[in-house]
Length: 330
Image (cartoon, helix red, strand yellow):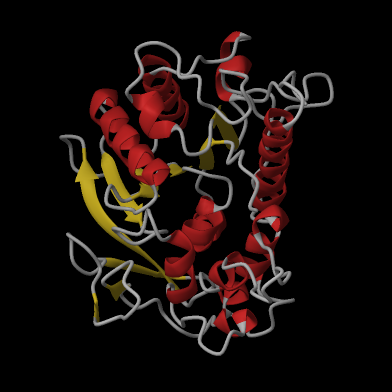
């Protein structure tokens, strides 16, 4: 697959291609389209390795620990170039190497293409290292860009959960797994509550949002995303497009993978963000919207409602996904 060595690297590359395909189909449900021309594409796939962004961001020489062992970016493309849909290849007919300079240049290219006034991405205190690194990369790119606008930051994995993501995913977003019914976590009439504390302890003794306190922005999702029937709920239909990331089969111990309930738990009445302005000029009230996600599905979990609202208002929306997410779920 994509020229990756046989065995696990080729499997990883196949996962990366699959997840890119899922992202394109999911965003199409919200009216966005992928194009081989980055200037006209609503979806930009950067193609960096899953769980490798922190290492890439520190690398002067190309990082070689990527799951696919390709040692460069790749993403799903068109029929003629099925593995060459990554942004740098579409811009320059070459893949990016896995270095800090290349990663920063690719995020700069995303910002230059979108010229956004509203940017949605991760918080720097997100428990997943890829998410935290994307947040840092986006903030740095915006500072370099000279643009002005407003930054809206979303939380996918609570602070401190990097070593216990499966446990955390069973507990948050609310409601927790409870009586082992992951389907009951589909709760479109509820709002998300603060994550439980301590993050990785067996016993929960409190709750808290993290170093910046409560989110300062709640965005009510469109009515089609508040439907009580999963088959009719637009946000769930978008999330469910990421079928490779939703595993509801029982393992040998009879346990259902945390993803089954976790993904459903993001279907809520509001999406929530921590906001602040970027740039020196007052933030414009209208203009293009950019969503920058670490993995295919983060943009749907955290900002599908925002994307739908912006599209309905006639605003240009671009979604950029930084990694392939090229690691199998199990």
